[in-house]
Image (cartoon, rainbow, N blue to C red):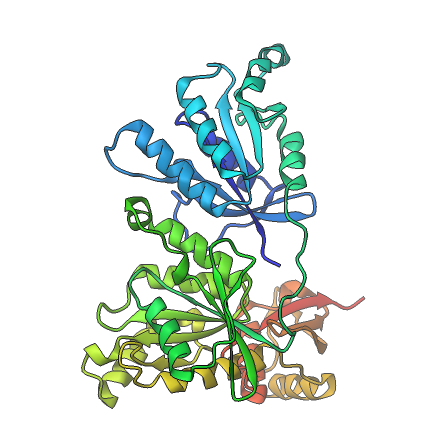
Length: 436
C-alpha cells in the first residue's frame, strides 16, 4: 500500500517550513532523508508513532514575481491535488487575515480532510486566543509551536486519523505492476501508448489507488501486467510546467505501487542531474529497475554509439549497475519489443529466493577466495547467512561483530551472490547480524 500524503498549506510567513523541518528533522519523526533532494526540497518521508507518511511543504515552491495571491492559490491547488490530508497552517499571533480566508475557500472546495494548525502559540496564555479560528469552519484548531515543538503530537494524531484504510488488492498477486518515471518530455506517454497499441491487448482502464493515475491492465504471453501511468497525471498550466519538484512527487507515488520501475532517459538531450535524482528514488525504494533510453531514432543509433551511451549511463548511474539498459523509440516503435522481456526478468529476480544451504556454499567459497578483514586487531567471522525476504531480495549475514563487516567487504559478498544467482534488474540488501 502506498504511503499517505500530507500537505502543509497556508499563506506565506505562517511557519510552514519550520513545522516541515521539525517534523522531518527530529529523530522522533524522521524515517529517511530522501537522497538527491536538495535543501530546498518540498518532500520528505516522516513518521508519527507507527505510521509513515509523505510530507509536502508548499513553502518550498518558488514561482517568480507573480502577485502574492496568485502564488498562494497555485501552491494550494497543487498541494491539494496531491495530498490525502491537508494541514492548514495559520499564525496565532496575527489572527485571521483575508489571505487565510482565501485559502480556506480553496480548501472547502477540495473536499479533502483539513486539520487546522495554529502556529506560533508559544505559551499557555495564547491558547485562549485561538478560538476565533473556529470561524474558518474546519473544526477544532490545534495550537502548536514550530519553534519549540509544542502541540505537534495532538495535531499529528488528528492527521493520521484521516488516513485511508488499506485497500484490497485489485489484481491477482501474479500480476506485475510497472511504472514509467523520468523528467518531463522524455516520452513516458508515448511509450505507454506504444506498448498498449502494439499489443492491442488492453482489458480495461481501472482507476488506481493513486489520485489521478490510471492503472491500465494488459496481457502479454499469458502474463498479466498493469502499467501505472504517471505521465497521465500531468496537468496543464504554468504551475505544473514550472515546478518539476511536483513531478518527482508524482513519480514517488507510482514507485511505491510498482514491482518494476522503468526509468526513462532522453537520448536526444542526454543524461542530466535530474535523471539521476529521479532514478535514485526507485533504487532507494528497493524496486526492480530497467533503464530505458528513449528517442534512440533521433541519434546516431549504430552499435558503436549504443555502446558509448551505455558506458556513459554506467558511469553516471553507478548505483544502478544491476539494471539492464534498453534502447528504443516509442515514436517509431523500434526495439519496443525488447522491453517487456526485461520487465519480466527484473520482476522474477526481484521475487527470487535462494536456498540457505546453497547460499552458504557461495558465502564460504567467497571467504576462501578473499578472507575476511581485521579491524583494530579483531577479525571478522562470518558464521552463516540466510535470505530473510524478497522484493528486494534481502540477506542476513550472522557475524561475531556487525561493526567488523566493512562496506567494501559487504560489496564483495554482494558481487559474489550476484555472480552465483543472477539478480539482474533488482537491488539486493545485505544486513550484518550478531549471532546470539
